[in-house]
Image (cartoon, rainbow, N blue to C red; front, side):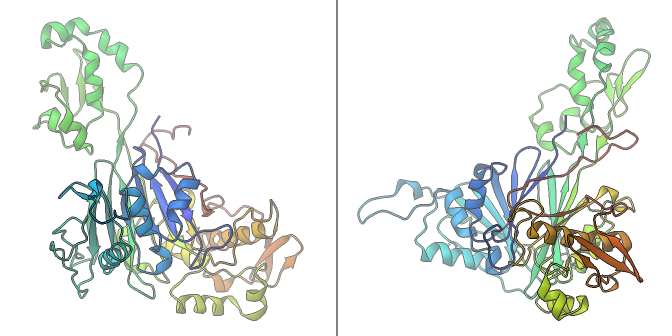
Length: 481
């Protein structure tokens, strides 16, 4: 059974942590268990140690969205843990942990201009000596200053000579900033009160399942493969079906999305009469190659009031992670009493932030789900104002649960309806435990399903994993999860 990607929010509060939400950080756990970390606010490593879905030893790459403190204050302490940091030794003693002169970096950090200087200063001024090496790559805008990476400038365990990455001069994106056989990550600018970066993770396609009847059909022709092709065990051919193959190339160096697997292959080159791009050739038929399952596409935004510069890169994403710092609901009494939605939105924008409605409009803009309808996309809201506690902070059905249900419904209705939040007269109907939305003089209970999007909007909770559903293989029914 294929393994899906799991998203683990580690910190979902905006600016200041509260009793139930920590500062910004999010982990993406890949099928291989390799873990990518996006932002590292204060307390990130404590959160990782609290939640069993994320393992410290599996984190090798960290991506920073912008330089605000609530997104980076936990980065240096985390690196000290990941790289076996030490505080030095007394005079006259040599710390054997820091005697190596070079090494493969244990952690690669990507971020905007300033992240290298910040880490160098923090690690040096706190006398933090890392045993393992780090690599820092800055994603620079055209006019950003260049931070030198010569030996004299680098931190003692920083890879020297790292080249920074500039955006494509045509579309403004940082394409393929890092890739493995499992995924590729690109990035692009988003608008905030300081320079911001959004990241797009594209999972590589994975081979579909080999039909169960292939093995007995191969074994039925064992004598044929032995006598004609000198293959004593034709079942060995099955694994080759799950690699892309070009007729002009050796199977062992195929153009598979899994080149590391091909590189490790010691299998011989089989004749095209045995296996080709079409499949395994039997005497009287061909066993076709299984279709590949498309990978997920996950767009991860930091703080933003306008992510539209990222639109082309994020189109048809499977998952969108978007901030929703401020929300206007009947349960946020101060908002309802003092200002209409338009005023709240204007205030959020003035500070570089978004509302749930703004997140939903961007979901529509990028065609979240990729099929023209929202049924197959997931919108994850995070970075909530400190006033919004975890859903279960005061128990099931408590005020926090009602507030977060209302926040989610704000996004659901705009995603489904397409109108901006100003069209919802939500402060006119409030009846006990029920919250009503007004549409042109009518009203609807928010507990009623919103066609197409109910369950597709998730308000992130610290430590609560979100499993990304596997995409369907074209022409096949979706496998049961």
